[in-house]
Figure 1: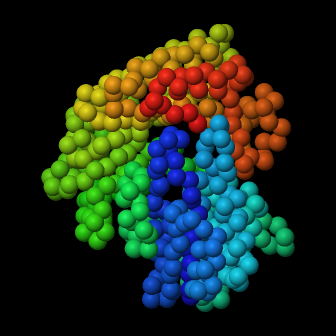
Figure 2: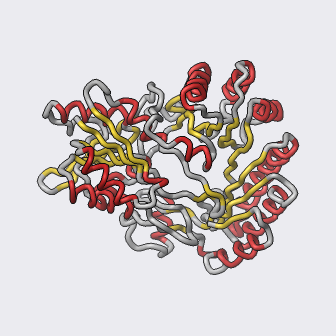
Length: 439
């Protein structure tokens, strides 16, 4: 069977200023599971395409695929200031394929998995795959080749008698095979981005695969030797030396993080890498090991308020916020002492936000991300609303939205007490700080 994989992500900005083009690592994992002895494979990555629809049509007419897998990375650009949905591009791609091919079209990826049925309804593919679906897509290709049914597979979404049907479970890839990067333009990705993604740990996401055990924090924890071997393979096969460790919280558990850093040092791997960390579970020894092993920048999530409180004057929120800001400041100071660049994404407008809490957050940023430090800050307005969440229910209660189910396009929650002033306040703050951005 001839299989075409398409990465539709074209979002290429980070913090509204820096150009960052993330490599489609999820699609590379899907490609790795396709049996080359049974199927012919082509990959289109639309990130660098000047005429992406023309390129899609050209490849489809030339290759004549029988199955097309489309990976959707983001629902939108996450910006309150300039919200842009990523889905219209994917729908254009599907329409163009439909115009010149009878191939079965399957959609998946992180964005699709967040709102699978809504995305399916909007995009109208033949089949959708919710969750981490590398193995599932490969199994579906084998079944299609044999003219057998595939609707029983985990995470499959399809239409039956005009109604959208979803299988009861979502796909959960073990990611046991290394990603196939041969079909991607790695030279282009070397010039823009944080580096090629290497998964170290993956947590559970209720929107894709909920944890069967609340105490089981991590869905995948890759053994340190396995991570080291992948880095070596990427170095030798593709001459790659810059990486992004895909990990929601690299520093937890701390022993694992230290072991990985020591292994990089002990193996003499000359690499540069970046990742996400949080204040909880970190010390100066770990930061020192990170720098010694090649870490050049860390991404930090900012302090936040507790979501709901009926306390008078919001005193508990302010106490909690002050504590979190203090811990964030300690972490930023440690990074600065170790010479480690950091980028903070600080949210504003969350439930409980007031003028006072906004001033406290801005005061923190004015110290933690001041101009003489190797630091950057993104000031994020509001929280993206998704169906079925507590935040969306609050937005309905407050009259911010009427329909809690129609949230495929970007809609953001902003606390009522700061709704009228938040954008002007943050734009004024950004004007005086060249390393700050607003979104």
